[in-house]
Length: 220
Image 1 (cartoon, rainbow, N blue to C red):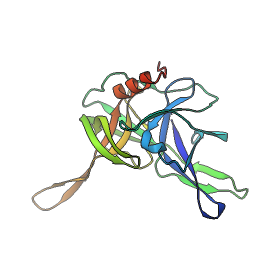
Image 2 (image 1 turned 90 degrees about the horizontal axis):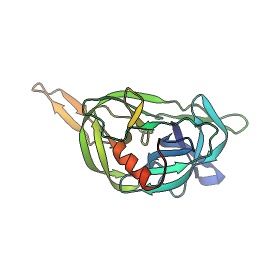
Image 3 (image 1 turned 90 degrees about the vertical axis):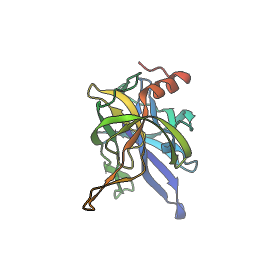
Image 4 (image 1 turned 120 degrees about the vertical axis):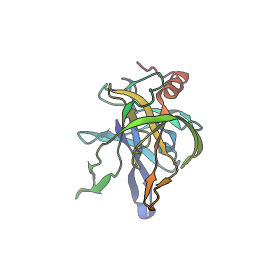
């Protein structure tokens, strides 16, 4: 798993650097998956700086898009990497009620040092334990447009920056791709107290496996 860095030209010959979302490797050849809306800005360059925080890649490497299904919000790309570690994908639907974990890179802190280089020690992994609540197919507005997410609801949401990250079961298999958050609902009791409810919306790993197979990406 790694953060997807975005480099975008700004005024006065400056460059804005941020984290657009999360991606994860799916085989030993450097192929990765993320949500398509994570890499949807034509004015930006997307780069790999390593599997942070412990593995910094220097120099950074450009993330190359291989195939995109904008309607399903999935993208597969490739980057030259020096390791062969990758996530294993469950090629069937995850059972309802299954404990899972949403992983990604929200709340990044990026600064510059005295030499003008990037300091990315504040870009760290987050893990959100939750469980599979129900099957779901939902039309969602994303920065890349309207998409249809086919997968499942998880009880607890990931944070902004975790889009494209893996949803993993206790056996370590990827069972989904974090894609969106449901609309806010409110639970109210008779004394007027309110609880705001949102759920994570993940693309199912069976949908992901079909997408990768359709584009000739070998998945162990």
